[in-house]
Length: 452
Image 1 (cartoon, rainbow, N blue to C red):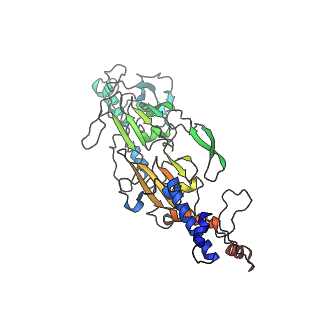
Image 2 (image 1 turned 180 degrees about the horizontal axis):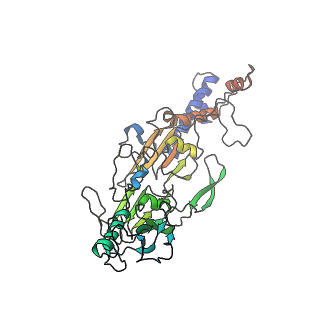
Image 3 (image 1 turned 30 degrees about the vertical axis):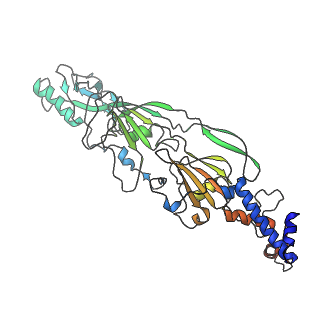
């Protein structure tokens, strides 16, 4: 060959000539790999921004830093005495006027377990807040307690109309059924939805064929009409009676659409542009104050409570990682190391026989360097695209290097030029002495080398 003849012109020994010829071939291979598109040398995304230099506005927002808001924020403060209003049903017994004097007064067991049995004829309070009773004008009971309402009716019969003698009247007023607020709860996080498994054959970085499956949840919304008793008409009770707090398939917020009533305005509380939609976040950063009014969580007839489904958030893998679309959890942070391990990527596995076709777990010799160049392609809020460079080896020891993964990220794992060259020379020059010594404990090791 011409190359051999050119080397033979120099007065080198045979060994030196072979060494120089090997070096020349290595240089030629590097040049060819550079112009032929070798990923380790001509990686198109390798020149990214180091993690330590990435502006804070591009970094992913931590998810685990947020905590569940106190559930008491979703529940109205317990009132003292129950105040009557339109829609309440009272049990009324007026001896000699309302009810058969020859029979005991009727007893009704209230629907609400916290109320005692009610005595008397059931009579509802009308929309104007009054209750119609025999032989007297309607009595206004709005805003009164049960005891105050009983005294008001006694005065109407014994003082105003003098139909019964004072201090000899037998008038009983009890609460049969408190008024209810009818709320419509629409939820898109149906916990009974069944996952659908779909996927196809893909070829991963080891040249093996595997089955890629993607879990697609068949979202099926539910709608429930809930009748909430007075003093229990809040967001927490509406959610509790329709399945509990929103699950992982839902957004971390509850939307209230006001209906059937005038919008309630309060200075200092932000409102949607239409002033009829209230958004209640369910998670907050430690120490963050309440962002909605205590009045916002009180529900009235006609209100709609909406739990919206969360759009799937995923990241993608490429390069020396199997091509996958991996879902991101709603409230859990996923770092670069964790993202690689989720798809079975190479992490500190030099010398491991990844395809394991021969039954060996560890290759002979010194092994191979693990790829450590991770490029994260990320889109910014303004539509731009940036490439962030992560040193996988440093990320194991430096939390600042272990980048948080954001929805839509594309992770491309490649070897550095040095790692690719080392892998090439490892294949070119097999040194089995150390491997045999440490594996067998025998001193009779061999040194096997080969040159092209």
